[in-house]
Amino acid sequence: MRCVAIGFEVTKYAVGKGTGMKKLIIHGDPGLRKGGRIEYEDEEYEVFSVSRQGDWHGPDRPQLWCTIGSEDEEETFKRQEYIPMHLDTDDIEAEAVTVLRERAPPNAES
Image (tube, rainbow, N blue to C red; front, top):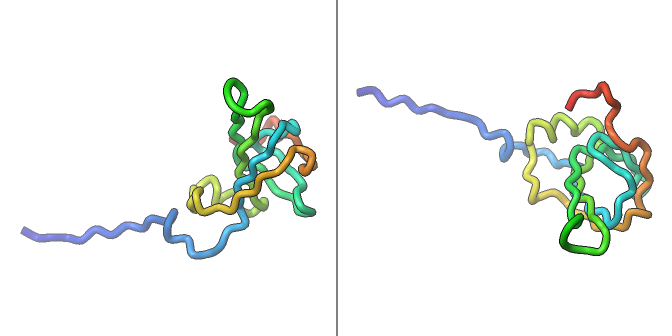
């Protein structure tokens, strides 16, 4: 019987470069959706995902839990080449965000 070692690469954990992506918890709803673009702390970010919390139970107003990053990090997000629990997290009020584009254009890929 011949034993063959099979190797594989787990890129999700093998990415050595730092990422500028972060989690952003927004208290309130500034009208932001997936595919949007925001300005926060004098930098522009693409919004890769939005999870709306607190509509039925919880705080008196909704919270948007967003994953944001630069435009060139979108492929990293889509391929899940990052560890979500290792992203920096900021907690802000809706008034601290300027919405530049509310959502992705209608003909954009999902």
